[in-house]
Length: 140
Image (cartoon, rainbow, N blue to C red; front, side, top):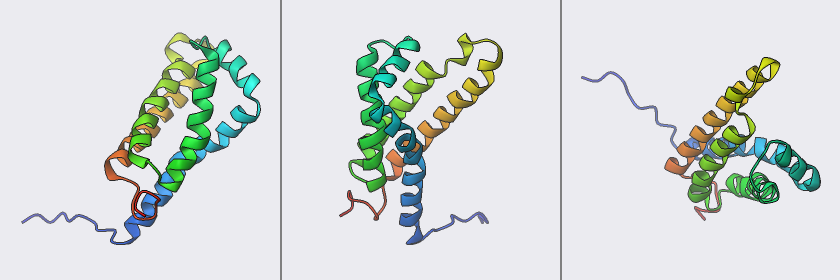
């Protein structure tokens, strides 16, 4: 007899999914608004990273981090956006936190941020699999 039982969150599952969506998106929203309001600086930053097509990269960053993240919170087009966020977050990890090419004091923080992005991508993958829950526009 299996003594391990699945813990059933019941109706609170939907509230937990809302909280998870907010937790995943808040980082993008907080850091996306300055990218939007200081767009020229965002393009310059992308250029300094050696990002291919820095203007396009800045546009993608702003779109993903502000409107797309807000849509995740609202639970609108949640599954497809979550999949896109998996690739976006992994891409930003490789482009922005390439600790393997760094030396000295830059290695540690960039390694942490790289793996933070990998973890966030995992959260978006779970969101793509579970869906947004009942407290979402998708379910209305």
